[in-house]
Image (cartoon, rainbow, N blue to C red):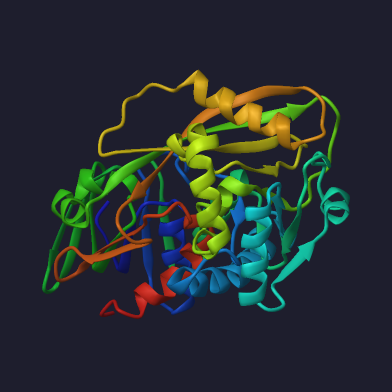
Length: 374
């Protein structure tokens, strides 16, 4: 399988596909190599949540660009993208204060809600509510179909060659281009972009070591409610305010973290971001917990699942909850939100190292390709 193209991309998750889509738009020829027969990693194990407003810095810029690309690709590749926004639920004075600070900073993007308005939008319990906020720019992507649909759409473009079940064994990048060695033969290109996610250390261990890469393991659930509910927007809670940077940087979030250090250390110890989205069939995706290690233990924890279920029962007015699926998500983690590093004269390693690949990858790719000598 010796082939020649302008760009070879390792990995057909959302980060790799984002670079392929952008490269084709620039008139480049692209070969995409994916070790599995379909994407089964972080790109399908997530909430399908395009969290635009709660980002800061480069991530906010990339998320804004990605939002427009998601809407375009949803139409062209044929998967669901909903401009549904996000409801952030405040169940304490500190959480309400954090939302008021964000609303003051992001004029027109954040609508503050009183308790009645929150309950009218999402089926949460009214008792103890301090109100909430609606983040109008956020999206919900049909995450279990989107990446496969983009790959199929991309394979239909004359300039793109998408190869599944093709494990990459190594990347040799020199001054006159690169050779990507695979289990099915060599692929030659002018430049390689390695989007191997948390497995970057398998291909480029020196780059991963230098970046301080490790793995973040999540526990997540798909649950069915005893009483059918409709949850149009994504739903974030106080624990989400400690995770997303535009909220985590507020005085309200700092005060919440201090209080939870005494009252809810279980949430802090498990690094919980309790949030949920609804799948097309009605089930809810609920998560998540975070554990960080270069080589994580392979075991899941029933206690963490029960913690998520208890938080969901306390949040929703939806009857009993039945767990339909349980899974562990894994993504690359390193200092900073994005890893973009040279891996030789004709290769670049790219990873989203903050769990926001679905939110930002389609906006990150143009910035990366602007720096690639093609």
